Image (cartoon, rainbow, N blue to C red; front, side, top):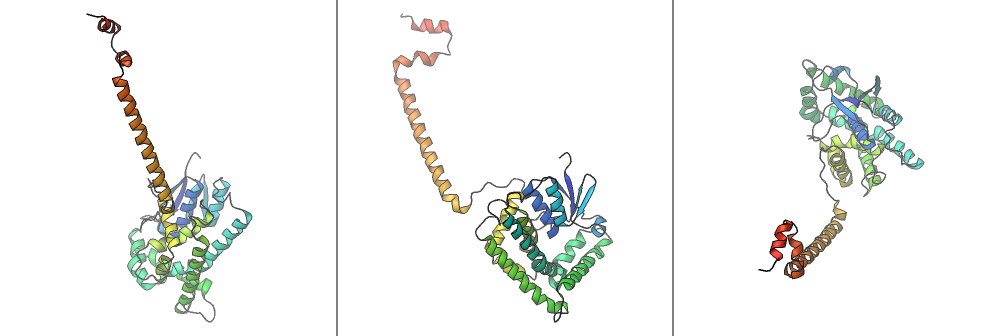
Length: 308
């Protein structure tokens, strides 16, 4: 495309391109689908209070919300799901719904409602990335929105207060992480060796939980016990969000690669020894001496060949 798409989002930290999980979803999907998306952080601007992130801008169009943005990218022929079967597509939608229903409330609570995390991490970070005087207002507004969303979606009799709801949402979130871990198994991505929209959603949700320096992190501790999900985050970050990703072989295939390299080295050494022997033979063979002095002038060669 002539001009890259522009994504307005919160900036990055903790080794992540953005600390905002919905923005991470869009950034990851753009990388997976090969779309040229230029991230434009709203940090330290008045958009910290007016913008709804993530917000995609392209050729006069403005698209909000991760799912709508992904659908827009598909219409622009950036489709990371084109190889999925109908069943895999249905599984993708089911797991995304599971993330929205069971993991999102716990994520909001962890970062915005948990008093210790809010005081030590979330509030200072967002305040330091907002201009004066919005730095006094933006964190509290985001925390209020998060609490309202949790209560709207999870508060029901007999769970009527945030304290009563807390146990329920963390239990559902841990179960969701367990299901994701079981579904991923030993695969690199959720549907084989190629990342899809499901990988983008999972990465967007769990990467901040995995990387953030949380003071109170029962959900983070649970996630770090699921090694395959942690490795999944590391693979996505190294493969798609590193300027010059290191070329590393997976541990499983490291030994065959080393064996092949060793065989190649031995072959090169044998060839080198053979060439060296041939060169010695050529040097000691009289009939080949005139050919080794081809670079001398013809007159000089004639003079040397005339007997005294």
